[in-house]
Image (tube, rainbow over all chains, first blue to last red; front, side):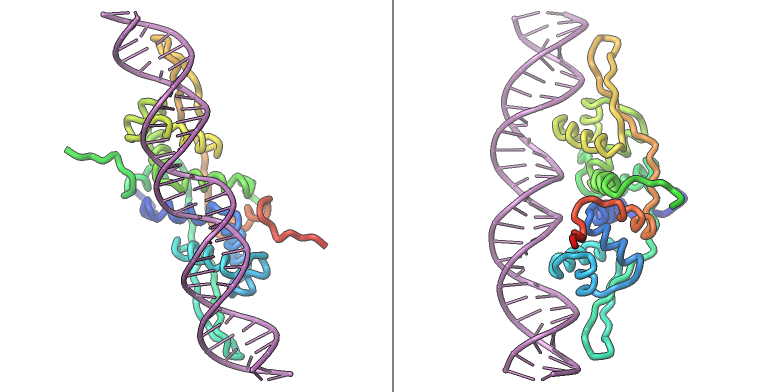
Amino acid sequence: MTQAGPTGDDLVEMLAALANPLRLRIVAQLAAERDYVSHLARVIGVSRPLLHMHLRRLEAAGLITGSLELSDDGKAMKYYEVTDFDLHLTAAALAEAAKTLTGPGPEEGS
Amino acid sequence: MTQAGPTGDDLVEMLAALANPLRLRIVAQLAAERDYVSHLARVIGVSRPLLHMHLRRLEAAGLITGSLELSDDGKAMKYYEVTDFDLHLTAAALAEAAKTLTGPGPEEGS
DNA sequence: CGTACCCGTAAAAGCGTTCTTACACGTGAT
DNA sequence: ATCACGTGTAAGAACGCTTTTACGGGTACG
């Protein structure tokens, strides 16, 4: 088993989070430098509500983390940054992860 | 630039193809041994039309390849097998791939 | 001819994702 | 108070993905 990777379900969630052009851009931008929501929305060119939703999805997958901080002039800013994830995808690795899938199974009853 | 990975759009397509429990099971099963559609459907426990659609998606992403072969008794069998893909996903790698995204862009007009 | 395998496709229901618009709340400066 | 900046959430349209059911064609065997 060597590398104890993520569980099957977690892997699917991570891949689903990355399988989107906009979210890929978000991760790319945050990889360059951590940023807060409103500014990030301006840089990438999307509305804040939309960005908020994508950030939620990325954070739920464990790819980024957000922390609420107070700026010098008292505003509450939410800064996001990427986590140190490192996924290696090969047919063998996927086969290993697939063993721990809970969702739609072969349904082995008696 | 080092590793000439897939283009941004291709990466999204691959990730989207893998971000599904059923397709993950399909890849895992094909990694164990190549198989033809009807048999694979029975092994995994899904209908053939449904499996057919997922195989199409996986093949379009370049993760599996199908070849039509004739069995000894003259039946046309379509065998699928996994390709030797090897994706390394890190924040830096994604940032590199994001540069070649064509889809929803910052729309830089004058 | 009827059955049993194999291949493929089309139409329609059900569901989740994506995106826009509009709203609510807080602080600091004019 | 009004404006500018930050935060978050809710409702609804539009769209694509997943899945089922039904139909079409092909070869070999009894």
